[in-house]
Image (cartoon, rainbow, N blue to C red):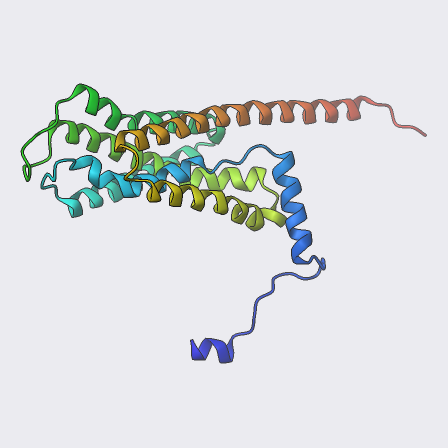
Length: 240
């Protein structure tokens, strides 16, 4: 810290345009108001899942291998990132396949609700993971694979839809409700059953899938409109 403070100068970015902090906030607010294409619900559900998977797999203090399960989650996430790289390399439409990813994510986080209603839980404390827990673990690994697909894909969409000059400001704007959402959920984690928490996250993910569908339709409409305007401009005769 002493070396950095004494030898590094502050990086204020490109000041050639002379934009101050308030100007950047105004540009970001205008972009958010005009572009209804950004969602943080997936990240909120993902961060909530981080705190809920342990009690979900061991509701009766079952003896589960936490380290092995976490390593499996990381492997599943890496597998999802590999799948995303292949999808992007094949020039597949991000807005299209992300609808499926969000829908699958919503289904996987609905599994704890379904298993609590349909699969009997073990009443023996300290036993191994139950059958319902095994089903949930399979769903959670699938969710982590969806998370692995999400990160590179959302970066691609951010580069397409968020203006570069206000990208960091816009993303920081959305960190505020995201962090508030996670804090509220964790503060009230004992007030609601864990199935309610997962059901809420599943609803949020289903909303994201619907918003992703809307994004694709709006983007396609915008491309058609732009192409039509370009063709009209080319067909117009040149004035002498």
